[in-house]
Image (tube, rainbow, N blue to C red; front, side):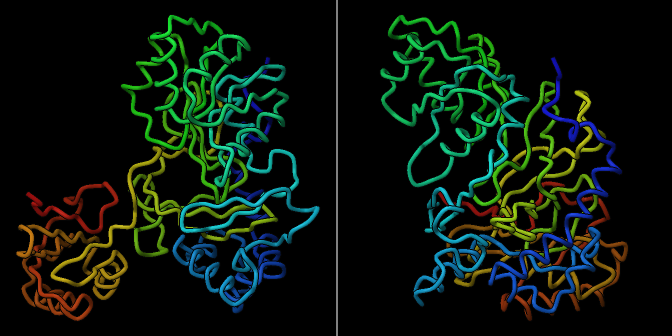
Length: 418
């Protein structure tokens, strides 16, 4: 039996990149022609010229709050509930509409495996002909449907367990004997603990696909000790599957249906490979063609390829949130302002704003990587730029290149809240 879902996973990196860059200008043109929001956002962009990562990086990043603002504005004006980002309308082309907190509405199209979840299920060990116990929510948010449509595309049957009702979940698992579980890791832990408390064995549940929460190695080992081999995936309601774990347990392999960039928080500028930054996704889904969608999540590209033979790029997984906007002395300071300061000085390689002190006694210092460590004139100009951009006074500290932590933080809140 094949270890891979399809041949796309094992094609050469060069073939994959060529295919993605061939699809990219067509997707940009499609978005401009059929999604009114992108007709506006990309009105001055020649779609045919967006055929490389460098050209893609020149396009604006659309972050979640901007998506929400456009949806709200359109709805208030009696317009498109999706803010002009969907190419579908209600009817035969759209099976369901979901709502994520905000409220952001997402369409579900009619294509098989619309959210592309079958690939990660296969990597987690699920195979055609099996029964899957699905404990993701089936109402409002799309998680339940994301997994169910993927399972059906894989050839599996689904028990729609949903959330809650732990004792009934245990009973259903004991009687139906599913091959495995799909849901949040915390709820699987609760179910296994409840089964032990009830004295009900669950011998068939030997694999799991988990998502929606952090999945630390300690919890994975806890499940392994109880006979459950659990894997994680990273997906969102906006773009579907982004990356998935394999048997190698070395990061997450990027899905074949998206283009992933890692950018410096607050900007659209790609960071060097290995540096932590914000995940920006370009979806190749024609129904909801999000171009350079900022997830707000931090991650980094891992070097090399997966030992399982999958040749796609890998990310380290979820590493925190990129939106580090912080209130300092009554003023909001956001990562984009730090990026603006850095761009003013070619001598500055990288910067990190550190806020310290106690409540009502904030202290602000910009730590700057530069080769000009003893340039007092440059330090004075950077200090002036800090005041100009943030409207706040702060110290400036020069440090050697490579001194700042590679954790994606542009603003560090180190204040004491005791």
